[in-house]
Each structure stands twice: as structure tokens, then as C-alpha cells.
Image (spheres, rainbow, N blue to C red):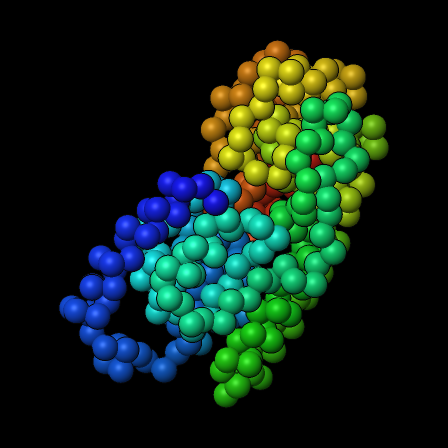
Length: 311
């Protein structure tokens, strides 16, 4: 957690507490009986929405197109957290902003990290050289494998049922229906990936985001332009040279770059190595009128783009 991010939250708290207590209506005047729920990212929010339907009042903190690794909370985010009864976060260190936000908002909410129960990966098995493995810790990008989102769905349903037992049956039914769709998605991805020759199943991305996908569907995650799980750092000249060498050595056919990340470095690497640059969605869904407005569509878009680039 940077001092700047922490200080921003501290500065906002007095203003927000004044607004919440001084001029806002009381909770009794505004509460329609639904749970007040917050989700951190658009992807977490979509899974919550699939399970909860319209039974909860859902606020998603991160706007569409926002990189969760570099997000700074805004005044309305502090207010939403202070007022929430249940907060859903991805977990595994993705939301670095969350703990100080919770502390300073004085939140009494139940905090559910939906990745609890997922077997986390470490930063291992990359071919990009020594410079491509300097970060340690757990890979937070578990949603790149829909089987992990099955775990999310169960965690969401259990938490909502505990907080709102009157609707537990509906949450369970919604979760079961969504789990069937996730299982169908997994089967569809396998069918699509079968179009890619085994020797072409090598991935280079802007940061290490595809580890779970690669492990599940038989790809090799060769390396990344930013050699770690977060986009909040800058690669050295030596690290950029190492990933370009790996692209040439392993015959990587494309560089995948997330739509929430500045593509300048990826464009440079693609140009230097003569491979395609393929935009994908990583940490955020698209806008409602875009091609990745739900998690299912997000995965459909990404898989289709990868297959088209590598087959």
C-alpha cells in the first residue's frame, strides 16, 4: 500500500462522514429491505449479480476499464463501504486498496474473499529468464479459469444465504443455474483450444495474468512484459530484452495486452519481435454495450481472440 493511496483515504474520511451523518437520509428512510452489498471489481460484481439477481442493492467499486492493481478509492467508494452489509472481494492480494479503505471507513460489513478455497498458484514455470521470476506470492488472477469461478459462486451463495436466510433458496437456485453455465463454458473453451496446434500454445502477456488459464487448458505461459502479477511496476531494459529473446526462442506468435493497461510497452515488444499484438480483457469487464459485459462474454471474447491469433 503506497503512502499516497493511504493518505487519500484518510483525507476523504472526515468529508464523507460529515456527508453521511449530516445531510444524508437515515438508513431507515432509504432501506428497501434488500442487503446493501459491495463488490470490488466488475468481474466479482457480475458473479454476485448472477447469484443475487435483484435481491440485493449492489455497488461495484471499480469503474469499467479500471485496472484493479492500481485503483485509488474515490469519495463515493468510502461511502459505499461504510454503508455496506456484505463486501465481496476477489482476494489473494489483488485489492491492495481494500484493507485501509475498510479501516478508515469504519466498516462493520462481512468481508468475503471469494477466492478462498481456490488452490493458488505461485510465479513459477516461466521461460523468460531469471528476470522473469523475481516476484513471489500468490497469483490473484484466478478468474481466468472458470472452474475457480465455480468456487466464487459457492462462496457468494453461502455468504448471501447467511446474511439473508429468507432468500437462501433463491440464492442456491441461482448459483446452481450459473454453475451449469460455467461448466458449459469450460467445455466450450476446451473445444476452441483444440483448434490451436500444441506447438503454438505459448502465451506472452503484459503481466502474469494467464497462469490459471494456461494450467487448465494446456498452454505455456512463457513470460510477461511486466514480470509479475501486478501492473504497478515498470520492467527494466534487461527484462524487456529477456522477454523479446524468449518470444523469438519459443516461437511465440502473439503478445496479449489487457485493455486496462497502457499498451505502449507491449506495442514496442510486438514491433521488435514481429509478432501480433492482441488486445484482450483481463481485470475488468467491458461497458454494458461492449463484447465482454459479463464474465461469460469476457471469457468468450478472450478465448476467441487467443484462438484466432494462435491457430
